[in-house]
Image (tube, rainbow, N blue to C red; front, top):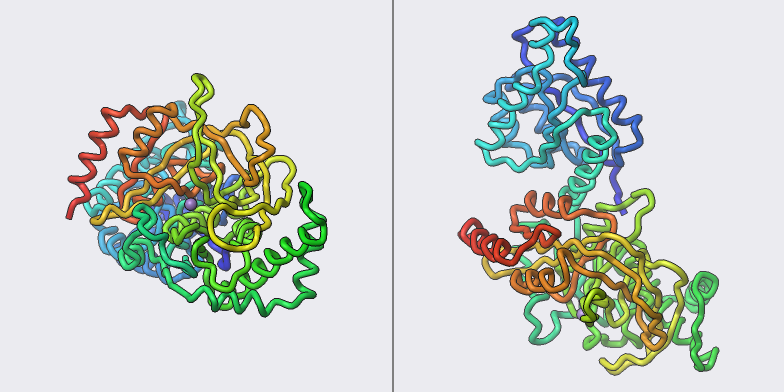
Length: 498
Ligand code: MN
């Protein structure tokens, strides 16, 4: 998914007040930190050491070089000694990439037996980083602050987690969404201002006539289709459920043609996300089901019924999790139906067809079933149940004067019994803090029925992403109470009003 070999620059702040010897120690220490961070295995991207920043000119030059370097996804700063923060003003004002202020110190423990004033002057991040932090607040520059000892695994993992947020921030402006259908008639929450989305997030959201992509599907050779159908039959269980085997295979082959044709069309036109609509399929013979599920698995964003905001969010969240060890998956999702039995409350998640198989646990099967909506052939789709454990569900909505990202911590569970008659992939979760409060807060916030869902990202990462985009984020989690949440919405409406 990522076409660039992203790196993060490590810039250490200091000044020349304490002489060259002190500065050589500063450089030595920060180089050692960078080496050990890279060797730790806890960071998903490489850190690149940069010469110590001590003057206004060098700071400004370094930040502008970081802006221009397309492999640089962000800068990590730390003031080993004291670095007068006025020197940073121009550089920070001109800097446009994610910034992490790592508030750390080279030594872990105070060297009680040997400490003297030279040591104090050389190791004064506790004091220098406060001066440094002040200027960000004064300039209202968005940044992440991580506090702790740099060699601790916990801190390294926090840096790694921020790196993924930073990738979501820098990659947001490379997201291009292909709309081959408009928003579903009369539906409000999936609508939005595409110009404002491009201004805020950098997304390009373009429409194509559905029959242009249908032509790309029709152009796929029978040979290519057969090969992909073979791959499906190898990889997935086939659930005929009484259907004729030949007829079943033909239905599956239609999805194989859609997968290949769509992917070629998206690649050729450089789009990383797509929206469809069951009511606007042109010459396509089936609603893209299995095909869209496979494209999502490959990293494409997707939103159904013309939902381009969710499609872009799914793409961004997939990019943020790329290469993650033991990733559990990220998908487009929809709140479908409740279980309201006391003690077993939860929401059954699904869609007509389009749930990403990265979230699957256990066998994945192909089924062909009629759709109650639309007027096409029975589409083939992948059916499975999903993993358990904590995850997040997010919804980006357009409130007319601003965007709001709603982030809900959820706990995914297995349903009590199999659902043999349900021909779609599912997940089941209980929102934090409980179904009643979680759903109440979600509805008060105006969250959609469609979500971008991930086991592999945290509310903190998505909230930091939203902050970098300059939009409102609200969290629904274990600490949410309705009284507090309503106040938060009210206060935010003041803070974000223009
Ligand atoms: Mn839907």
